[in-house]
Each structure stands twice: as structure tokens, then as C-alpha cells.
Length: 221
Image (cartoon, rainbow, N blue to C red; front, side, top):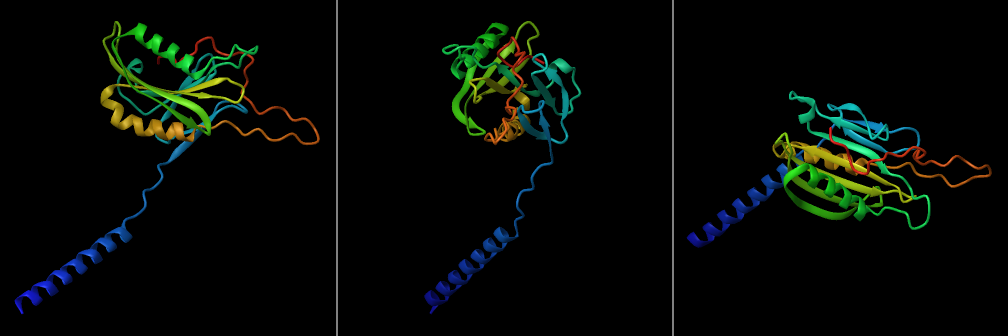
């Protein structure tokens, strides 16, 4: 009899726990989408979304890119920020195209020359807006200021073999706060779709590449 009562008690307790778990799951609200703003760099160029509480700091790369950042109290040169830019123009002749691997090597060389205690934390291939892309994450101490930085760079290949970049530069202590926002910015990055030609020729929906920047990696802020 005691054994039977014990089994019944265990069954009742198990049923109660399942009911409570189901109620908690059903009552859990879906995560709300964070408010965001949309930025498009010129007519027919790249677009991305960034947190609504952030601000546009200004253009970079001779007007071929932009920097955005959250509110911060320290001096501007120490701000955590994200830049998005058109960094390498399409090739003028066959065989002159710069690959994403080459763009990354240029970026790594630039950071290595300007820093010490340099290390590569991560490198991976991925796709952004359905296009080939690569990510590289670097850690270094800047010379001569001694400021410690992490740069997370994503290079994206465009349809005409041009290259774009989306880059995070922040203090290591800010990564927990900045990296999720940076990931959402990269995931939202797009180029306009080129419409198929109709009866009349249409202007190509591609970035203005008549005056591409000289630099090939995201600038320091």
C-alpha cells in the first residue's frame, strides 16, 4: 500500500511540474525587436540599420563611408564605434581585382604596424547580404597612446568585385556591449538589388565609384 501511494504521489508531482513548465513556456513573451534607425550611404549605395540611441559621427574615407557610435563620455579618440564604407573600387582591367584575403592582409598589416602585443583572435568566412565575406578580429595595444583595442572587421565582396567593410573598434571592456550591436549591423547590411532591364535602359543601381578612396581598410576614429 505504501509503495502504491508513493508511486501515485510521484506521478502527481511529475504532472504538476510538467503543467508549471508548460505554463511558463506559454506565458514567456517573445523578445522585442530593439528600436533602430536606417542609414543609406548615397543613392544606390549600401544601407544598414543601427541602434536608435546611437548617432552618426560623420563621414569617413573621403565621403565613401560613415561612422556611428553610442553616447560616450570620454574623449572622441577613445570612443567605441562602428564604421561602414566602400573601401576598394572595382578593377579597371581583368586580373586587377583585390580579393577579400588581400584586403584582410592589408588591414592586419596596418594594425600590426600601429600596435604592439598584436594577436589575431578570430577569422572566419561567412556571407553578408548573400555575398561572400570574411571576418577577422584583432587585439592590440596602440602606439604611442597605450590604449588597448579590439577591431572586428568584416569585408564584403560586391557584384563588380569592389569591396566594402563594416568594422567595430572598441575597448576590450566594451565588447560585451558593442559586439551584439555590431552583429546586428552586419546582419542588416545590404546593397540595393539591381532591377532587370526593361524596354528602356535604366541607370545601374550601383555605388558611385568614380572617386574611390585611396585607403583600403577602415580608418581610425
